[in-house]
Length: 321
Image (tube, rainbow, N blue to C red; front, top):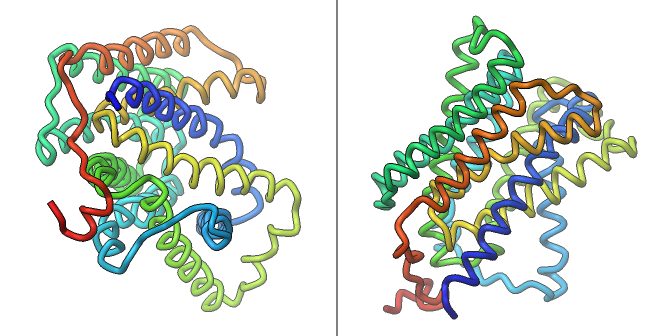
């Protein structure tokens, strides 16, 4: 099968990934009013693990993973979710959401640098300029909205957010070669298992030491919390992992990361129509820069690009060439 149809599906997956993330902020707001950030993370990964395990046990989904495969995927899971989510959560505790948005916008830059060094992805001058334009569009929106970029006195929080951005960039880069060895479902299942175990052990351990075990289960009796948790656990955790793994199999990490900037645009539109937030001139200017940047990064490259050559997952796992 030619790579062109696959590339089309990969771009659709990347756009769907950005759309889901764009709406996730609405549901994050609903959950953090009912539970601590640590409990929310633990609950969403437990839900995503259960949702994926049921069809696996019923035989609807085939997972062919052994211990050596888990060890190969472990570095990916360490980057995200195991390190990325805590860094982001604790970073946002002492910084503003605008600062978080600005720093998150740097992910494509870190991804470009890491991808060019570690997996030898090459980009044209047009792509580099377009990527920077898209990043600047996101930063412009947050700067104009807050009026004081990075004005926080918590440099520790800013450092944590920068490290979280680097982790997500590293995830984008490391996932690309792994998608040639494992299918998206296998990668997602392993990261879900590890996320579920680690975050729930930490959350339960914290409540046990603090004597607040009831706080872990208290939000679960509220229907609104479950509605938000289903979106975060199923769509924003499980489905986005599948979509990103599939997209990274066929398009470069730098392209995938810059498409993620569209989530800012989608969040802006969702805020205007759902939360009735006002759109200002800087939203429009920033949106235009983001869109032009995304288009330039994805269509301003070399015409002869081909995906990483793949071998069957079976031969990769058995060591056959």
